Length: 111
Length: 113
Image (tube, rainbow over all chains, first blue to last red; front, side, top):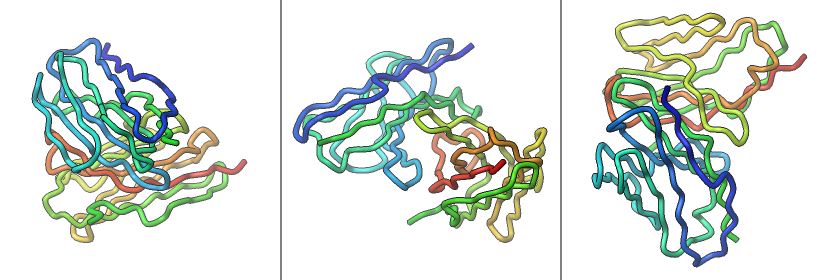
């Protein structure tokens, strides 16, 4: 069966520091991969998605970037965090027609 | 521009009664709709979906209704149980195979004993 791993679960970072969140999927090949963010009191906002290695689509211009160095690995990064980057970050995958399957998320607090 | 809207941020229902969560959308290209359930500090889990060729889909205690002319869908939970207390998100996509889902803001459902 397929599983998705996302880490760390929580992270507190100062403003201006870099960020790297990692997500890996097991039990499937060539998944579509996604990064979503849930800001306080708001819905799930799609940040990036990828349909293959090295292929990244950005949905919202911002302080973040994403990379897919391997088929089942998706990384969310920032060179310098802003206070507004605080939120709950979710990685998700789909095999195509299936619904999105989410990881357990990372709670990021920028101080 | 919020293409998928859940206008009730919270809902409180007595255990055993029916819970009805509502969702409206504006994009007529949306053709496939889903509901997700989310507990605190966890990722959302898929609950139920419906294609626009149907107006109802049922799975156990959960039923989703779709009214395409009104661009409205609803999730009915009956009977409601304490474990149903969670945040519920509706989501929409131009097709089942589309690469992106657009989510609503979520409704926090609380089931009171």
